[in-house]
Length: 328
Image 1 (cartoon, one colour):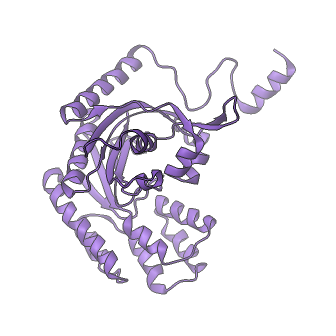
Image 2 (cartoon, rainbow, N blue to C red; image 1 turned 135 degrees about the vertical axis):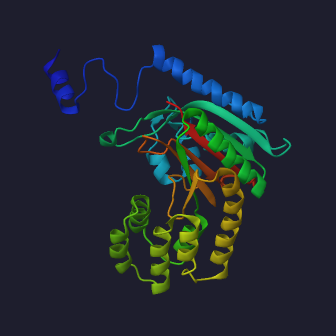
Image 3 (cartoon, rainbow, N blue to C red; image 1 turned 30 degrees about the vertical axis):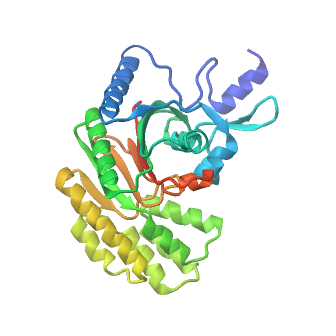
């Protein structure tokens, strides 16, 4: 081994002929288990009227930048082809599907019911031990904005997770209140990212410090604090949210959510909790969002939500909702 190679390996802690962080080589029992999960979920989706699609493994960088936002694009694995065009491995499945439907399938009867199984690729912090190649199975319902569709998708999400683990919980929220509060203040990119991090960590102390540095009405600052603390039982959250008294639009969103929750709670009692501080990595989510956890997992094994504005970025106007579950 050359001295240069020895130096490079010592600096990066990479063994000769080893794998990059965040990827695995599957064979034997591990591969069999993965394929069994995939077959179970594929069968479930097909029984519920979903047709399989296979998006390209890579697309133009701007597709993911347009769909998921700048931060998503930055975390994608990107490279240039021989013609100098910037490409990215697919960061998620939803964005390529939205682009594909917008360009090639505009004359199909709606709603479209699609499912997929495949790998997505994401740059992740090494120290967190997260995978960078992730096997997902998921669905998209495109062209319906009814509450019945939302309920169906949540129920299917719960059913899908239950095939992987009987001990699970689903966290449900709505990003409209957070986005409405954001529209009432002026934040630069740094403070916006800090606020998102605070909500993801449920860090009330850091929120108080950040709000001291933001010039806005005290009622808005208090509303952010209430929203961050709005996690738990529906009764507790109703009492918390009564204290947010800013405008009629926020009240309408809260009322709509509780009507939706009452309907799913009847069928999925003890499996659903509410978290109005729940945010997700993708900027395209427009209202309902959710994540699923199984016993022993410190990270969500899946999630999704409604993304009614995503297709507008590809010059179409289709409401849509979907979810993805990590199966590896």
